[in-house]
Length: 343
Image (cartoon, rainbow, N blue to C red; front, side):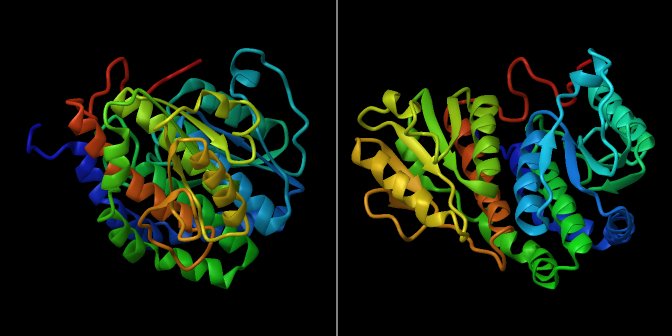
């Protein structure tokens, strides 16, 4: 195994600084967009994204529904780009997420949502991108260049930008304070890379990741990263769903990584983790409350909604090591490129 540090690891190490830069340089744009959202007072939200960006939207969906009581729906970009179907979106907020802001289908759906009645907010790393240009407001994530194909710092900064918008919209001082302490918490999270999980994965070719509520979005992102950086067939499930069929493929030693935040779903998730462990799986969970599953190190933040972000940073630190141990370059996964443009 080479001692050369990967670009992916460099970018993971940059996450705390990138978040701090976003909170400083992006504050004005976030506040301006939040003021427009408060004035609109939307009845509901829609999101537009693909891949890792869509996992951010899942995270923001739960956060919005929990904090603000507004339902959130994901719109398939092909509704606009291929099917050309208009939508009834009066008095809604549309959040589009794309680190490049270039994919034609994302841009077209954002444009159509604005046409059909939405206030349009883009979350992107490129404020001059087509997505930014077609939106009412742009939240630049200030991540700096991300050269590794696997999104890491752009995932976290996009999530922080979206969560900050919600905190400002709601005027939530507790959440706002927790967001501003994130850089220090994420710095500590980077030092955790779960060697016991890496050992259990070994040469396995299949595994599960689990979550519940906002942290299920992190489970989804983790499963994707296992696939794209390690060529491991990973499937993400809500802990509420895994016993409804998927658990049938679990056999002795099957790896399962469970993401638990310090929120109302933690006990329910840990109970399922223990049940799956009792069936012979090697189950790991980011909680101290498990009995049969193995509790693993984790960093808790100052708010349950920011906990998922520290967990994904520790995961990124781990998955890069798993890829390296398999002789895979996580910066250039096979069949993939940094910007994927779909119609």
